[in-house]
Image 1: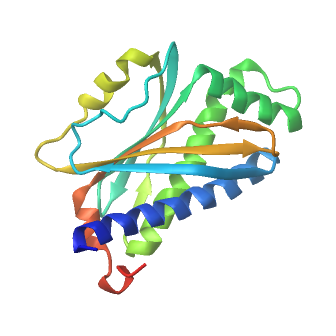
Image 2: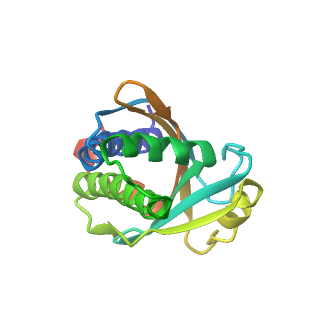
Length: 199
């Protein structure tokens, strides 16, 4: 395996550990057992290729978190309408009385949990000082998703894009599979300690 591929695999391995941590934190937050399965990663070494964005219909809920610190980046957690309802139903089972007005705050908190878990895992593994800013939520037509991402392309500071889909299973029954897209500065690959590249 060449050095570039080894570095890419290491970052994906670390991010997967972050998703596992996120499932545990998510489970504690909503008081429902959550398991994570079928995580898939596609890494693209430029930030203007969005061919791996899954097509959706109707409106999508896009939660955006800016990564700040020793390396820059941005994450996009994307739920379609059905997945959004699925999350709300799963949470409502243990928290009766949740109103529709809490849907958006709930999604923001979920993004906060998942993004923070992955960012924390990257920070620990790379011994880097990075953190996620307060997430924002945009509700927009699915057809506008690539346009939103294209506006954030920065040719002066090259980034890689990591497309992720992972299935969260609530209490062994309900499943949701949101898209998670990470734009991360390519310098992250140079920050990996050499002694960890055999992982």
